[in-house]
Length: 278
Length: 283
Image (cartoon, rainbow over the protein chains, first blue to last red):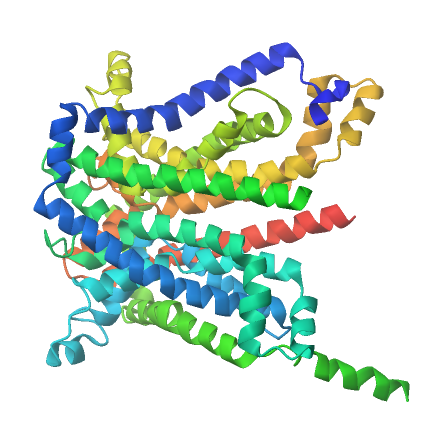
């Protein structure tokens, strides 16, 4: 629509210069890295690629990554739903502060997100001696990896849901309540259908980050091969051993996950736009 | 009489919906367990070294060098993203070309791609025998395992921040403004420079700050390409990890708190920018 307004059309020389600059930038910083990734993964043929993935250490890394995401994502979904309900549907003092605190993990270096749990649960940490006395391992084990992942992905679901719930207001829920629905019924039958796409969007982004997190997990994992290595950490080890084909093969799985996430995200955005239009 | 009418319904109204205490309780408990208590542990561990200890950490030559390289590379990367990110946002909003939707989705790649994956891909691309690295090497430029490599990784991860903050503002921009400028005889470049750009400044600054803040804390994509030589290509997050591996918990905590202080100042700047932007809009 806008492009049809003659005075808003950029003159051709401007378009060509800017277009070339954009093309070069996108090729250099987005397309070529992605191409390198798959080219390296398949550099020695499909067989070498499959062999690199079908290997015990790779499988255990895949399993651990899926386990961590399967624990961390639902936890953040429950939190995200609770936080967005409280923040979007009610007025209370300190709301702004609460929202800022929920966003806090986005502005922290991932390394710090791992470090804080080492300081709490590590051997020299606050709870370290007690945990040791009771023979519970948090750091260099699954609980530590899950905690670090939860902290890093903390804001994703809440952040997507709060604006959606705020835009929706409280009238529909109030009507449901006045018509005799219980609180849980109101939430399940009225609120949830209204926010489902926003929720799915948040879950997608949360999951992508949970499976791909490197810095925070690297600090708490201890890099025990076959035991506490997630997929990104496994990629690092293979790369540092100069086993490039294997490193890029496992990395390509993560890249496929990223591309699938982007495709689903685009589909959701398109759906949201058509729903608003209709 | 009016007073009574005024106050009673309002009190009841807030309680029609259930679950306020439950959901706020879950939120606060989870926030405390995952974010607040760990942060308190961090700050108290850093406080253990005392004010003098903090100053001593901050002024250690190796730490100073790592701050210099981290902030320097982040500034350069954010500046590059500012220019190309806003060009990209402009093209995505204003131009119609085949593949536009694909490009629009593709811009989020750095958000979705795990940092370690980006790190090894960029390193291979820019290493001495890599596709782009060999070209640069022929010109006598060292990219991978040198400061330019750090900046390249940071450009990659920061790009979506600028595009995604500028894009919605451009979409909301009223075309009448530009048409008026054109009718009054301004050339297209004049219109963009004098009419569009001033409207975009808050969004540009916010995008720049977000990209910069993300770059300062970045770890995964940088450590592969940086070379990690102490004092030259060692970034602050890596120095924290190194201290942790040497069981220098207090030192790591002190460095982390210094970084947090910087992030906090930037977060504050972003918030102020946004208030400024809304106020400008309201005017």
